[in-house]
Length: 232
Image (tube, rainbow, N blue to C red; front, side, top):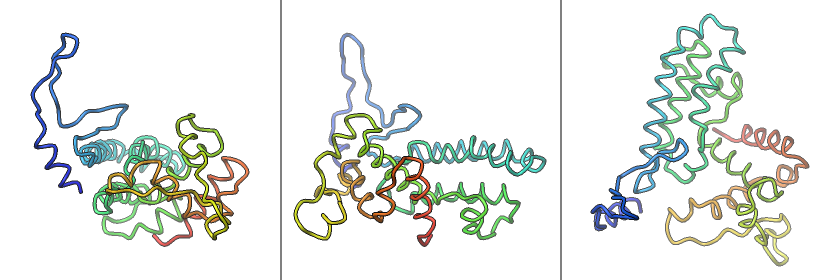
């Protein structure tokens, strides 16, 4: 699908255009609110930027970590590294695992440094049990489900809430009994990455006990606990 997209892009005229007297030259990527968006929507440029900046921050704070209290060191790492991995990560929904694995390697290196583990030490236990972080793939789903909860409870911008309106499965079916949402059919894999499709799909995978949380805080707690019970 992405190869097909690239082929179509090659057929487009990339000559500069003039708008209101200003010449605009097409580019292969742009940066908007800290997110690098490329012409094929692969987000590879954004991921490369996140990896580069994250490792730069790791090298910068590496010496300081060893002399700081553990809680302070964790806060420092969360602020300068993990926040970069998590920023707008719901946009990465639907990307192949081999692409997201590159971000996971950044998290793994961060966990090893923070916990004083060796370069080749296993990090699953460190990330889950000691640092209480969700792996990259699961945290993307966490953010997606969080957006869904906010949208369905009118805690999100109106345009997101409207996407979830009247989307419950109708009839007397198992899905309707669970209050599942309608997942729109798509023609391409890229269509499936849209919030209106990926959001309901992620929501439907949650148990009712998590969906029926009475507050945003309780939902966050229940949601994170649910993901921790899944196999990594």
